[in-house]
Image 1 (spheres, rainbow, N blue to C red):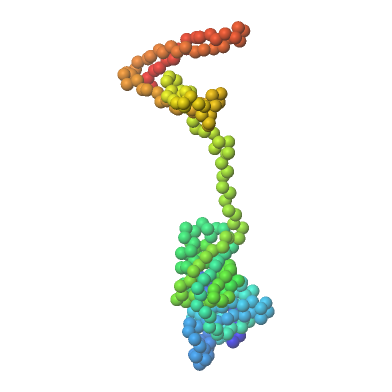
Image 2: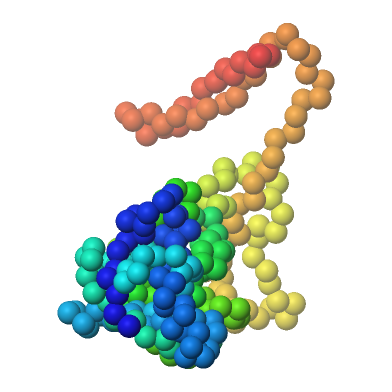
Amino acid sequence: MTYQCYSVAMLPGNERQDVERGGKIIMPPSALEQLTRLNINYPMLFKLTNKKTSRVTHCGVLEFVADEGKVYLPLWMMHNMVLEEGDLVQMESVSLPVGTFSKFQPLNPDFLDITNPKAVLENCLRSFACLTTGDVIAVRYNQKAYELCVLETKPGDAISIIECDMNVEFAPPVGYKEPEKEKKNEEEMAVDPADLMPEPSGFVAFRGAGNRLDGKKRKDSTSSDVSSPKPVYVKGIPDYDYQIGTLKFIRRPVKQKNNDTDEVVTLNHLVVQASA
């Protein structure tokens, strides 16, 4: 059967968004009578061919209300077939295997902004009857259209997706780049937090070197090379007797080196503590 094809926008009557969002077409009533006489298998699936460009796709039928000699296709399907308004398209009834797997590639990275893209795609595919490898379908979500390329279908290049259990996968979108992980500064990672602690004051336990009871030297160390333990940070002891509103003057000895005589001079350093 050969028909003149038009986009759904050319269909008389109210706007049919349900046709634009799916993969089904509108055919004339005479096509239903002819198909009924042929005793075809249900659901009705068709192979569409543009002889000028040898482009092929597959679709289902939604209604038989078109004018005689005309069929109305979704706009995305006409783009796939490289068809203009009024061009001729050849149609034939086919039987397709039930799909078990399909893989899609978004043509825009904006598709990843959807919270659950797989659920959105599965919901939109309910308006489709079949899929063809190489087609670019349109998925509408939140008043925006996303184009997806059908990269792969199993068990064939064209499958039926009516009442089937099909696995869906996504390929990285066209133009998508993996975000670069921030490289940590190796110098910062090499610093030991213990080295940043202040030198401990007062008694430090186990600071000396160990000796054997028989007087022999240890194999793992020598008397000349004894590794000193890393300092342990000592927390200050709070003054539990401190009274708010008082000042305390604490004098601490501070050693300074005299550049002229290379002598160490001890000065008194005054520290003032006050309440906030």
